Amino acid sequence: MKKVKITVVRKARYDDLIEKFENPIEHACDIEEGVVYIANGWQKPDGFCDSAWETVSPFVMTLAHGGEDLYDGWMKNKKSAMISCNDGFRPVSFYIEALDEDAD
Image (cartoon, rainbow, N blue to C red; front, side, top):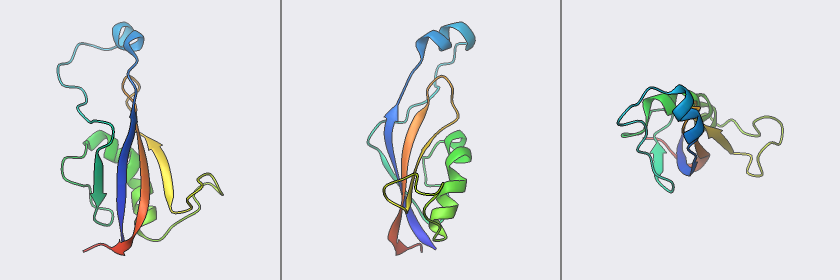
């Protein structure tokens, strides 16, 4: 199994949707653009958002096990994926790429 690098590339925030639909919450998402996580195989990295992990983990697992060319040529790098978390108010986009080194 390979290690997988997960980079936070974009975080959006839709204040109009938050105001219209969301109950006020104090600590919604504290992830920051540019942060890099390394998944040891398909294991969730320490500090990674549980909700986001539910969305990205199938792609991490596929890449960790050597899968590539997801969605028939969707990505320039065949050993990668661009996946966003499922938060409709504050979606975060992650660039996920298999590394050449094996997981521990």
